Image 1 (tube, helix red, strand yellow):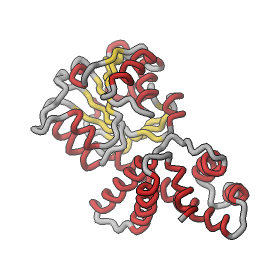
Image 2 (cartoon, one colour):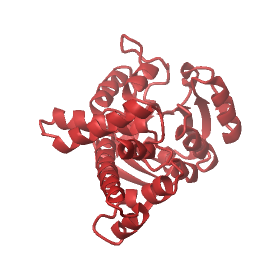
Image 3 (spheres, one colour):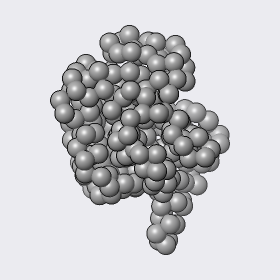
Image 4 (spheres, one colour):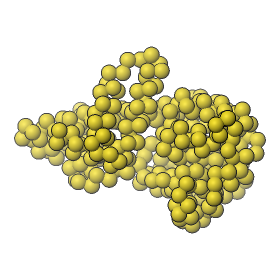
Length: 295
């Protein structure tokens, strides 16, 4: 189906959801309806995207593809299903739901099974890339699906928001990969922060230390972007909140436990992030460095 033939709904218009939804309409040319629990946000995004604003998720019932970009998989399930497992959105049979949130893969499979019982199909398509890439439509997507026809229906919509789509396997594998990627990234962030705290206390200039890492084996996304721009540069505005990073690493920890795998590194990273989160609350994740440096 081409863009004019596909009607898209979008639920969750936060930091990432708002620009993603806008790109569905503006870059993809899709007929778009949007909904957020905040009526003002719904109105503002609808106006910016040239879309229709919905007063409730149920008003998206005429959509062929419904995208969710919400804080957790529990919130996704609550938005889509009532306590008896019945769909809150009376869409047409065969409608495709696309969860682009950073969700728990085990919970994603449970939600998918419940939606299938209602005659719907679910694919998971979490994103990698901060708000700037959401705005430019250059996100990386990890796509998991059990139903190839559902994936084929979702892909043109996803392409309007992304520059690369990786097929990861069956339903839930996209969310699993997202959590594991963010665990690896968080490990690099925590380890680099620990090294820089030690460097500063020993008399090294953290800016010079990062420059050396970037021409040595310690190089990572964190040494290339997060620390130069947001920690040493003082911006502290990566667009990725500390509670969300902590949540993602907890998901990875749960996934490792579910597979029977020991997770000493993941456990240590969760402990470090939770300590910073308890002290700082809802701040940009890069500010965790300040807490570890003071401790």
